[in-house]
Length: 313
View 1 (tube, rainbow, N blue to C red):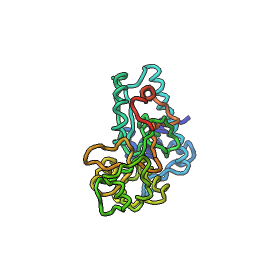
View 2: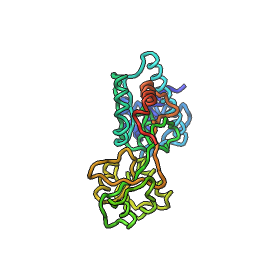
View 3: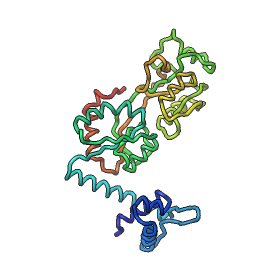
């Protein structure tokens, strides 16, 4: 039987790609770590890592070992956490992954209710891109994340949160790059009817998109593809608020979720889209990992208060 401590050693070496950094992470001496890995390789009769002048990389057998070792380590951590909760009750921390803007709109009312019921639970918010959040969620670095569908990671499952319309954001004033059709959309004399704007008519306009790694970028690119064009990307940003500011200053157009639309004087003009696109937000968590009691209680609060806390289409 292999000691789980050795499994953690192998996984740490693979993650750091360096024995010294792995030893520092594990709080052991580097020579001891090297000896333990070499001993394990002899006992298994296979090499787990190739040591070359360019660095360390796992062998095919090593990759198989690492994948299964990672699952065993997660099961061990989950089992310990679950047993502690059975004996000690709900834990003292809940970690939630979210993109910054979405979290700011969705979480506050839910956290307000949660904090009243569980005032001793510390909430740790982890803000990152959608791509990073999927990895964090699958690896157990957060208990769950607020993400938009579709999820790319096959090991994640979800509870639906809300579905909302997507809007086209346009400058309030005429710009030299605007076609006559787009000029008609922003005319102060025209009241836009629901499902009025044909996105294909905007195919030659400069677009402002989120950077790679953000799920909403893929949503917008997919919408454009479905309308028969690939957008000309004028600006990329990691913030939907920055995207709207760029649009408001006449530097392009963008697509936004309805929840982030502004009503102030300096905001973009918003138009509904003919195809009535939507996005669905979900609470995503790892299928094969234990969902802690704090996370379970949070989702229960959401289910109990969903009608009053969110707006669905």
